[in-house]
Length: 155
Image (tube, rainbow, N blue to C red; front, side, top):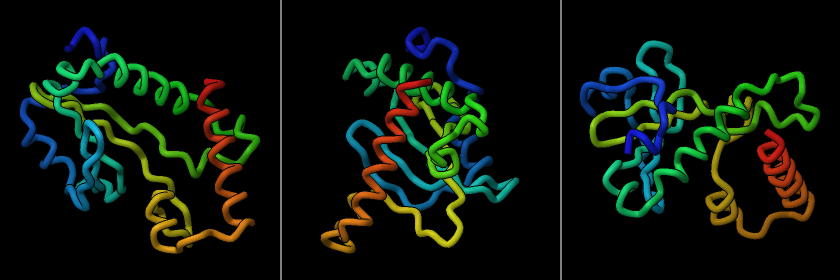
């Protein structure tokens, strides 16, 4: 497992409890092979999205290389200067903050974008709440998604 992540972790945690000393964890959500929640840095008060991935499950499902590739891609995106952002996406993209690992889990923390005056939510929740979107809103969201995928593939 450690070879598959190939040094992509920023820090090793002595135990899973060490994370609780660094972050307050709120609003858990369950994903396909990991869980995600909001984590608030105890020192800075900044909010992060925290993805928790069990190492055993990664190995059993053969997803370690997939996680390694995703972390590497997010690092490349993070290292890209904001002044190269011609589409205005830099501020609204989920960006990698750090990767921590314990003996049993990998913790991937993402910076949550500061969207002043906007409620940050995922697209499925927005559609479930609002129902059918107006064409202008759907076009705006679709354009942002396409540009974000384009930008990620250029890194």
